Image (cartoon, rainbow, N blue to C red):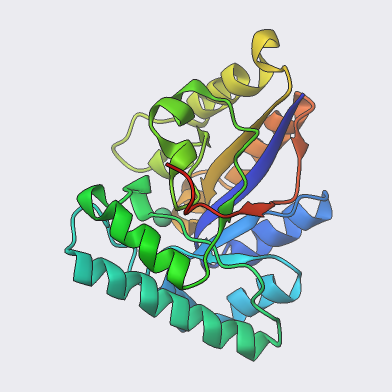
Length: 234
Ligand SMILES: [Zn+2]
């Protein structure tokens, strides 16, 4: 049986509260990542998540690709979102016990990666505990040693867009491969990446429910996120 942590990026959007309610209703506590400027526009949705006991992490201020912007711009992106989160946690009356970060596009900053490690450490960040993740691609890509929260299974539902040949059938086939194949069901963990996107809901209503139900059909156990230090990793 696979254990999995569900991570949801790019909140807050209109479908964020329905996603939270669906997940909590079936006992799943997702880890959320917010885009700072969206959070400023819709703080009430972030507050809703926090008051439901969920952790909201930093996903930069404007969803910047940190492998493409300058180091100064990247630092500003992380700091600004961090400050927005401080304010909103405060407004929600919730102590910000855990700070986590995820790189937009999973673009880990290229040659600036080490500088981001220093920044995130200094700001008190941890990362999602991924010691149980053994997916080969996760290890060979070096993600096990990253300072941000990466993923070992990307749902790719954000590709459900006009002009793309991605379909829900293909997404479900990928889930079957990763979660349903006998040789892959031995004890291991997955970090699942999905998104809170209103555009996806327009194309594929309740996409998150369809995907999660398929994972559950294989006995996947969704576990609460735990966290670890990253700066001692090589
Ligand atoms: Zn994102």
